[in-house]
Image (tube, rainbow, N blue to C red; front, side):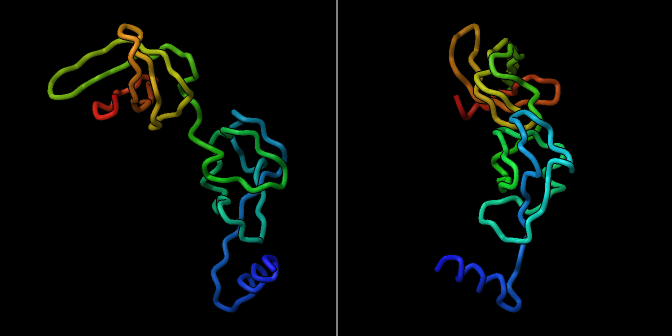
Length: 142
């Protein structure tokens, strides 16, 4: 029944279709995606990425298996800060600038939110990774 409904939607005149991006081969987590890693399916697959250009240069955050759809949450910007790395932790608000060291509690790329433990106070804060690998603390998320 589900297959018949899906075929009806695909064949209906004037219906919108979007190709789904599939992994062309098995891709290990941490691999930077290139055009060779991707293929297109002519079927619309819910939740699958539809633009291969948007995936090129991204990093696989999970293992991706051949001929399976790639979801946007399966990839992210290339990792700049690895888990357990010591990073500069910067707090800047209202003219107050505090810089200390923190330990990354996860991995993240530029512009992504990362949870970091302040090594001096042992408190956990959230911040945004910058291009130089430092983490700018979000004062609203202690």
